Image (cartoon, rainbow, N blue to C red; front, side, top):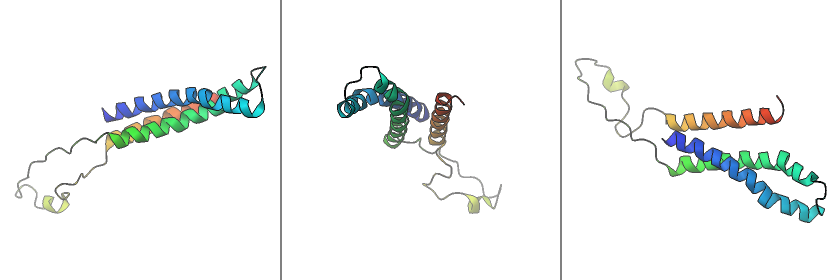
Length: 126
C-alpha cells in the first residue's frame, strides 16, 4: 500500500505542480513582461514552466509520502534447528535488523521515474 500511495501522491503532485505553474508563474511573468495579448506567455508556461514544475512537485510529493509513511514490519522468523543447518547461525542477520531492502520504496521510485521519463520523451516527440 505504501508504494501505491507514493505513486498516487506523485501523480497528484505533478497535477498540482502543473496547475501551480499557471496560478503562480503566469502572473509573475505577465507582471514582468507586460500584458499577454496573443497567448504567447501562456503557451510558454504550458510547455516549459508547467512540465518542469510538474516533475519537481511529483518528486517532492513522492519523497514526502515515503518519509511520512512507515515501512512494513519485518516478518518474524522461526528459530531454525541447528541440526538442520549448522552454518545458518553464522549467515543470519542480527535480531532487530531488516536483512532486505524496502521493496515498496524501490517499486514506487522506479514507477515514478519511468512515468517522468516517458512523459518527457512524449513531450519532446521521442
